[in-house]
Amino acid sequence: MDLNLTKDELQFRDELRAWLAANMPRDWNDWREKPLEESFPYLRAWQRKLQEGRWAAVSWPKEYGGRSATLMEQAIFWEEMARVEAPPMANSLGLGLIGPTIIAYGTEEQKKRYVPKILSAEEIWCQGFSEPNAGSDLASLQTEARLDGDAYIVNGQKVWTSYGWVGDWCELVVRTDPNVPKHKGLTVLLVDMKAHGVDVRPLRQMTGESEFNEIFFRDVRVPAANVLGKVNDGWNVAISTLAHERGAYGARLHLLFKRNIDRLIALAHTIQHNGKPAAQDPLIRQKLAQYYAEIEIMRLNQMRAFSRITATGVPGPEGSILKIFWSELNQRIQQFAQELLGPYGQLLGTDSRAVDHGIWSYGYLRTRGNTIEAGTSEIQRNIIGHFVLGLPRSY
Ligand SMILES: Cc1cc2nc3c(=O)[nH]c(=O)nc-3n(C[C@H](O)[C@H](O)[C@H](O)COP(=O)(O)OP(=O)(O)OC[C@H]3O[C@@H](n4cnc5c(N)ncnc54)[C@H](O)[C@@H]3O)c2cc1C
Image 1 (tube, rainbow, N blue to C red):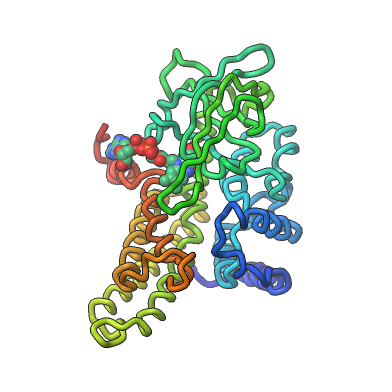
Image 2 (cartoon, helix red, strand yellow; image 1 turned 30 degrees about the vertical axis):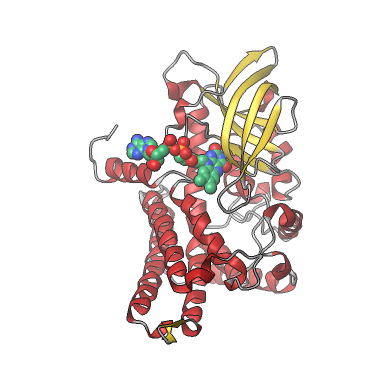
C-alpha cells in the first residue's frame, strides 16, 4: 500500500482545490441546520454547479459526464469536500448507486434519457428495494409486475424508501415470475414516481424528520421499455446497486467522524466535569484517544480496500468489515458525546442553549439507523463468517 500521491493525483487535487476556492457557496452555514425539505432546492443548485465543473460524479466514466477518477482520486475528492465542509449533493442515491447501475445495465436509450438529468439533479432518484416482509432477505419481496401488452402492471408496497418524498424516479425491484426460485423471478423497473397509482406516504423518524417513506403501487403501468437489464435478471442488477452502496458509503465517512471528534476534543476543554475541564478527566481522555485511533484505523482500512481493488480489480471482504466498523463506531462516538455534554446534548437545534446547533441530539438519534441501513450488522457478520472465515451458513 503506497499512500504517497502521484503527480497526476496531486494535479487532480490542486484543480479541485482551485475550483472549490472559486465556487464553494459562502452562505452554506445559513442552510446547514435547516430541515432537508427546506434546504433541498439549495442542495440541487449546489449539485448543478458541481456538475458544471464536471465534479458531481468523478468516478463515472468521462463519456457519461464523469472524470473516470481512480479510487485514490475519489478518496481525494471526498477529502477535499470534507476539508472545506462542502454541502452534500441533492441526488445522492442517483449519483452514488443508481446512475452507475444504469450505466452498467441500461440500453443506450436509457443511458441517454436518464444519466444527464441525474448529474444535473434535474431528476431525483430513490431506491425501491425493501418491503414490510423483505429487508435482509430481499429476494423474498412480493411487489409484483405482470406484463400487459407493452407495459408492466405493478402492485405492491415498498418501505423505508429514502428520498421517496422528493423522488422523480425509482429503481424498483419487482417479482415478474412467481413460479421459479425466488432469486430468479425478479426484475428491475425504472418507475416514474408521478405515474398514476403511485402513492407516497411519509414515515416520521425519531429525529423528527421524514427522510424516508412508504410507497404503495396500485395498478401502476410501467412501459416494458423501462426494464433495466434483462427480465428475471433483477437480482444481479440489484446486487450491483448494493455493491455501490457499500463501497461509496464508507469512503467519505472517516472524514466526517474526524470532524466530530475534533469538535468533541474542543468541547472537552470548555465543559466542566467536577469543577475541572472535562479534558482533564482520565476517562474522557482515554475515550477521546480511543476514538481518534479507531478513526485512523478506519481510514487505513479504507485505503487498504482501495489499494486491493486497484491491484486486483476485485473488491475484497473489506466492504462488510468497514460497514460494521464505521456504523458501530459512529454509535459509540455519539453515545460518548451525550456522556460528555450531559443534558445539554439532548437539546434540539431549535433551543438556543443547544450545543453546536443541536447536531449532537440529532446525531445520537440518527446513528441508531446506521447498523440497519445498507445491510444490518448481523447480515454483514454472516457475510464475513461465510465468505471470509469459511464458516457454514447460519440459515
Ligand atoms: C436510515 C435508513 C434508510 C433506508 N433507506 C432505504 C432505501 O432508500 N431503500 C430501501 O429499499 N430500503 C432502505 N432502508 C431499509 C434497509 O435496507 C432495511 O431496513 C434493512 O435491509 C433491514 O431489513 P428489515 O428492516 O426488513 O429488517 P429484517 O430483515 O426484518 O431484520 C430484522 C432483524 O433480524 C436480523 N436478521 C435478519 N436476517 C438475519 C439472519 N439471516 N441472520 C441473523 N440476523 C438476521 C437483522 O439483522 C435485524 O436485526 C433503509 C433503512 C434505514 C434504517
